[in-house]
Every structure is written in structure tokens, then in C-alpha cells.
Length: 320
Image 1: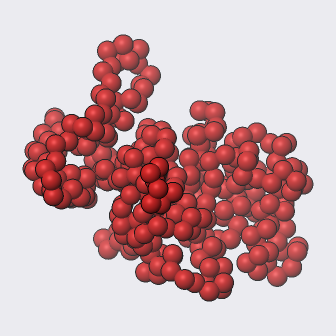
Image 2: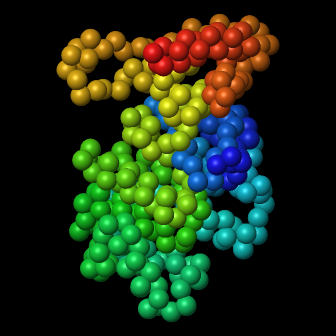
Image 3: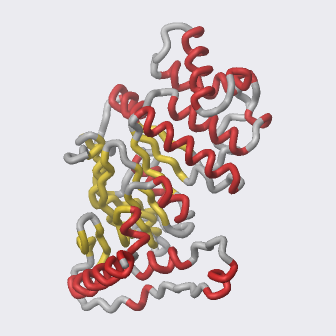
């Protein structure tokens, strides 16, 4: 893709809770990034760093405290008519973290999936809607016999597949997957991730994939953003981030990934991140700076040169 098309642009996005009070929480604190059509952007970080809040603010489940979210050049958080919001909701969907809580236990699978089809008028008759539901179930690896069952009759992995089918039902262009595999057994996680990859190729979908499992994020993502306490501290192509992690927090996250090698695990040294290690002068501008093509780090001008040298060394070592 020589000329990438920006599907989503996030400019200086802020999401603050308890604004103006002593216990104000800056869950998302002035972050900016783009998502290109057809790609998967992974967003990682420890619990409470603001990654899920970022996803929910992008899709306007929360109104932003500040900044802009542009979807195809249009501001998602600007005042919109009912019709505009209706169309926006169809183009952008979300797969939620908890496959047990995100499905209505009183509705049959048929009705859960068909709800969006009916709301957006995507079927001319009830029979056509039912056929679409059957097709969606087969698309996510289930069968039409499952349509008449209730959510409690399914395993966690099957429920998440139903959640994916529900998101696909309205024919979206962009899907926010908010930790879609964290509640699943390890053996099922790969199945769900492979399903998402296959659907992306088949339907040309664009994903924001939110997770804390860095090994799985690398597998599915084209680029990865790393969040720490509401800030985006590093953003890079997936391979480059793993080959040459620059920000100390990114190094800390990567050092915690276990490998199926007892000898490695016995000698593995965990790097701990100390935020006080950054020494900034008063008035010094701290922002995302491009260290290498497409590789950005949240740093000062003085740190920028240090990170460029570090990237060159790590890249050179990886090539040997």
C-alpha cells in the first residue's frame, strides 16, 4: 500500500474524570495517532493505563474531555444529528472484553445478532434477516443450529464468536476489539485471533486491537502503541518495536513476556520501569518524536538523540 488512507485520526485526545477536583483522573491524557484503512493497530499497556478508555472514547461511548476523533475526516465528537450518529454507529463497532456480560442472557442468539440488522434496516424481510444471522454464525465458526439457543448454553470462546458476529452484522468498516481474548482460555485465544485475521482479509476490516498480552498483539498487529498512565509513550511498526524497544516502559513490558524455555526463564532478568529516571528541565517540551521512520517515542529533545543512537545499535545487533 504505497499511499495509505487514513481511516481514523486522533488529535490530542483527552478523557478526564472528576474534572477540577483533587482526585481528578486523567485516564487519557493528550494522545495523538492515526489508524490506516485495512491495518490493525495494537494498543498495549498494564491494567489501568487508559487503553480501554481510549477505545470507548473513540467510539463515543464516552464524550471526550478534549481533542478530536476524525473518522474519514469527520469529527466523531462534534454535535451530530440522530441520522448522522445512526450511520456512524453502523460503520464503527466494538467487541467487548467480557463475553459473559456483553450478551443479553434473556435473548436468543438469533435475536442478539439480528438486532443491529433490524435497527439499520439491512434486511427487507424477517426471513432475510434470519438468513443473514445464519450466514454470520457460519462465518465465525458456529452453525445455524446455534441460533435458537441462549448465551448461557455456550462456552466463553463461543460467546466471543457470537459477539464478533454481532459486530459484523451491521457491515462495519472499523472494529475496536477491547481485550477480546483476555477472558478466554489460552487454547481458545489463538482461535479467536486467527478468526479476526481471516475476517480482516475477507472483508477489508480495520482494527484497533486493545490488549495486555504483547506476544498476541505482535501476532495480529501491523503497528503497536504503548500506553502508560494515560500517555502514549511509544508507537512503531510491530517488528521494529520488538526488535528495538526504546522507551524504558516498553522494555519493561517486553522483559515480562514468558517464553517456553526453562533455561531462558531461569536466567531472565525483568526490567523495572522507574518514571523518575526521566530528568526534564522546567519548560522542556515533552512530545512524541520520530526516532526512525514510523517509530515514535514520547521524549524530550535531549532524549531524542539518545534514542536515535539506541535504535541504530539495537537494529544493527538484530541484523547480525
